Amino acid sequence: MISILFWLGLVGFAVWNGAQVFHAHYVNWKIQDVFEGVTANMGNANEFDVRERLPKLYKINYLAPSDLSQEFHDNLLIRREGSMLEISSIYSVVIWPLGPVQQLDEKGGYEPDELEGMDSLRDKLRIDIEFEPYAISE
Image (cartoon, rainbow, N blue to C red; front, top):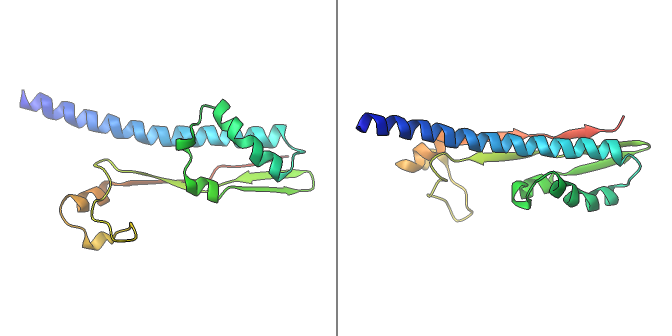
């Protein structure tokens, strides 16, 4: 019975983490779809019009505001040069299989070499995924 519980727990852990990784990639695919749609359908729009329309396009593509980090919005670049429209961003997603590190300094960060106990394991198991959605009108 303990063996079955162990394997069920292990498989459940793997499925849970796989679902989190899949969700991060799914959100990036939806963002890429929005960017490609903007460059294909709003080729004559200026940067202000595109920025104003993006929240509606995210909602249409089933992207919740919580799916997009502040880093995504800070790095969002919309550039118009003649008839060319370019849109891109750079952001990262951190997945914590065992939960986030608890031993944080006053700035909210931590030094990996100074971690002890479970926090050391949490840091080693963390998954960092970086995304760079990009589209340009042709």
